[in-house]
Length: 132
Ligand SMILES: [Zn+2]
Image 1 (tube, helix red, strand yellow):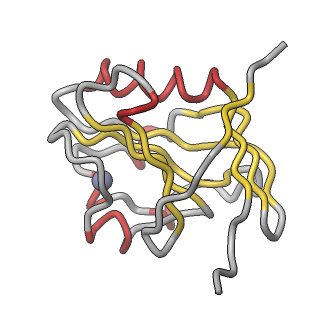
Image 2 (image 1 turned 180 degrees about the vertical axis):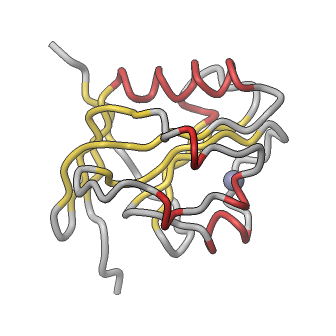
């Protein structure tokens, strides 16, 4: 039995921003904060935010989550894998912040280069919301 996030809705502009940002940062890792709404079993991602300068670093492994501003609208994070590996690393899971994590792997061309995971590293299905 699975208890956890049942529904993930991500605006198309968020998917596009993550891919564009990942490309712009390549070959370094890029990291974004995800803002939206969350309740017990559903997450809605509406926009991305570039983290404050103080928390950016060359490696996501050293991402100091405790230095982030307290903002309840942050539902998770997104970052890129320049290596092309479309799976969370041990560091990713140890540094998990929020409810979901988006990983975009090189070459960052489309949704097929993206996965969404929960804090246990399980891949979540998500729906892309087209803005009207
Ligand atoms: Zn990673």
